[in-house]
Length: 254
Image 1 (cartoon, rainbow, N blue to C red):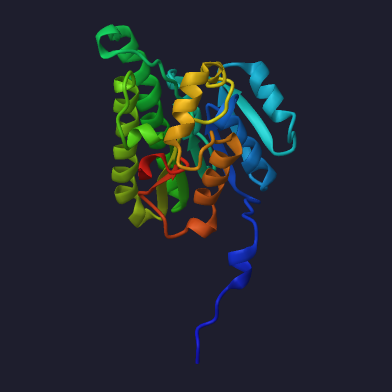
Image 2 (spheres, one colour):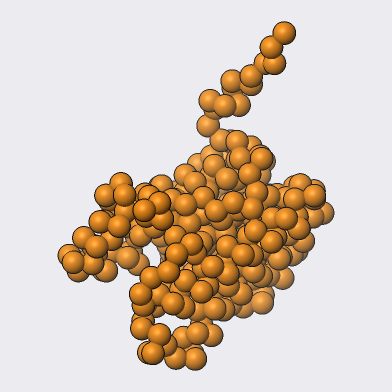
């Protein structure tokens, strides 16, 4: 007698009906794509960002499934609101930034700003979400990392520092929360075509350097990253925790 294979679960698209998701950095770029994608898959999504006009635009794609909080991830008020939620099944920590500079030019103000945004805010969101998920006995936390959380690069010393920290947080928290039925993973993209990176690609030399370092030969899209997030949040990733899913086109495989 052979064991049956649940073909339906293997071939059906992820469905998040009845699930509640919260996406920080949900007004633009990667966070926007994640919020819209999760809502399209049935989740009730709360998009979080500072700029209400951006959030209204995101909500317009799916008013039935997307609400928003105009909050700053550097303000403690956001984390109080998360901890007062009745249900939270998926957290996507997307808020973040970069300021490429030679190490000799990096000021203390820049260090504090980027560490607060890329590390402290991700940590606080994960911590607050975990408090709700522990009560439920389930949940999925997905932190937005970067290929720079796995390698180094010139003029990105501070950014690499913050993203290596996100990778460490993800692994440690995954081990801590696994016995409670909560999975914690990261997504680590390469250079993605977003409103933030598009001005950089106007420099043809820089764009060619990036494309030459990506084994697949082209820059990624926000859909590439959102698809990875949706997979990790789905039942199809039920046995995956403590992982970093690199959406890097082979950059780190060289």
